[in-house]
Length: 219
Image 1 (cartoon, rainbow, N blue to C red):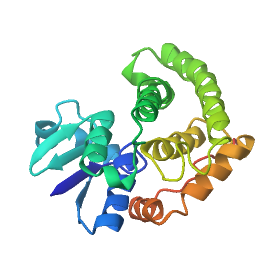
Image 2: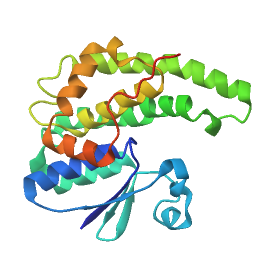
Image 3: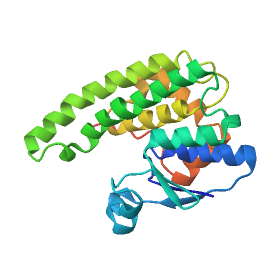
């Protein structure tokens, strides 16, 4: 039995939508537990007992906690290879894992520097500079992803929605929070809107209740 600890709009959306796809294909149910990040529930003792890093996602597998999104994705793909969450060809799978790692260790932390600069500096001016500098970097990274999704046929690794597509959706949403107008990334926006109509993705989005477009124009 699987139980996913997730935060609304967080990168935990990737395994959340994947578990919906698995449920849809196999009939296997899973449980969810919302972790209210804005209330710092990830810092509560009971959650830290599952993940001392105080982060989502956490996937309980028969009561055993598994952390780190790349590891969770690798586990789910190996457990359910028939779903197609990663390519089956060894070289293509390695390429997909490389891209997944890049999204997680390069694009994701760049956004963290924008959204939570206090994690990296305690000086207000330093925080402002971190946010300014990394906002520009984040936009450039989203533009790189737009180049990738523009070639998707129909998805990044072929006919089946993969973890890469799901992570691309998360990173796009975060762009709005970083002040990137989604209308300035039209191919990326169209890709994400198409992905959001896939039933498993739509189900996870509905449970989380977070909009695709998080952008707010400056007053």
